[in-house]
Length: 338
Image (cartoon, rainbow, N blue to C red):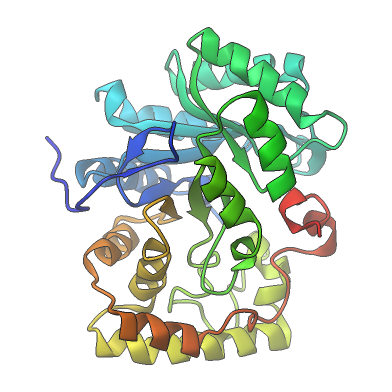
């Protein structure tokens, strides 16, 4: 039996599923943030479901299948319809965990989905999306292949990730897009100029990842960094050297506001994203139950117009130091092309 502590639901665009206002991103449970803790990860996913969180976001390349197997274990024994499973595909990796580009050809999509369904232990995926735009495959061809999978009942909705406004329009002309998954936070507001208006024009929802900027604006990030070379954040510009110190100064400004609201920095940062529109569902990357409880507390945090103005004055648009990724990864983002 679940206890819904998250209040009103939200719908992903005009054609997508209904979800709780906060979703759970599972990447860090398998990959990129240091050693995994499978029992705690499974317990965290189950705790999220018990609290009414139903949007669970994974990728077939997170831990090279490990993340999907983890999710299968977490939802085993529960009603399938209680979870909205979002899967990203297309990123190619090697046996050492390296990155080898993107593949969104129709034949590859069928192959990726077949493996995901087997690992997840289900016969359909709620939202299926290419993790990045494949520069070698027209987006119309990719969406056309996904539309065939919708007809077959293997996927329920088509999503996209990190694409720009023009690509979103081209894709939506082939088949309705439920939502665009893209980074959006107090220090990553690039979508506001063109991408968010285009999504709203088309009736496409936003699933916002990185709402705590991978922990940078959580209020918990140490001034000396993680110290773990297996944590990919150690290699990101915003987490390095003087950039880190400048960004943590912004966090301390935010902490003053959080203290005045008897809240945590993370809760204020998540609540700010929630305030940006009913068509936006933030994904929190909690890897432990205590962090999950903290993050979900944002749903009940009431931010007045005065509070929102104070938050944006503390962390003005464009004040973050450093880019989201290194140059090679930034080049893969259609959403960052101008």
